Amino acid sequence: MGRTTAQARDMSVRNRRGTATEFFVAAETGQVLRGARYGVPAPPRAFAVCDPLDCGRAAATAPAAAAVSLSFNPFFPKVFLAAHQGGSVSRFSTESSLALERWDGVTPGEVVAVRWSLSRPSQFFVLDDRNYITVFDLLSNKQPTHFEEFGKLERKERIVSLELAKIEDNTGASGHKGQFFASLAYDDGRTDVHLLAEEFVACSPEDMEESRALLDPKP
Image (cartoon, rainbow, N blue to C red; front, side, top):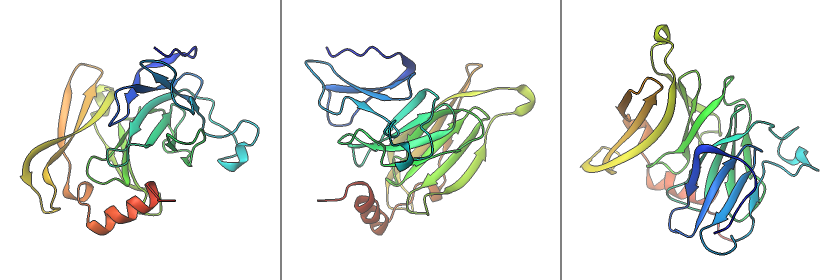
């Protein structure tokens, strides 16, 4: 099994869809590390927000905070997001060691989790430690499209996990077979499950083609 020497955050190891031979780890150093269950992992073996000798190509400086969450796009498995505790999110390709895109100041707090949408390949959700979920859509000027606060502030509860799920059941107005849910886990042991509204599920054929051109361009 391939080994790495950097420390890893708990619950920040992800497998890439379509392969069971490799895994990706969000590290305390801020990098994302690629490992192999057998033999040596394919290059690149480490992913960074920017080249430390040329950080100007991505942003003024590289984030010093740990990488805390990873999410692979369910439609384009070579594309993944890495969230850093300090409030930044970056988009990567498994074929390039440097980030392709970066969003700084996604939240004034700390990022807890980032998740790609299961129905819109251009959309992702960011959970922060203030119990806010911020929604981004790469087809909408790559800016936040929605903010939503969860939990009860008077109880000082904290959401510690966000997961998305699809149940193959009904057919919505969007034409997607199934219903889409967001599961929020709290630090007191409670879990809430929310049905995602149609605006966060709908994806037209045109949206899909635009997303493909952006996230999976052909040479």
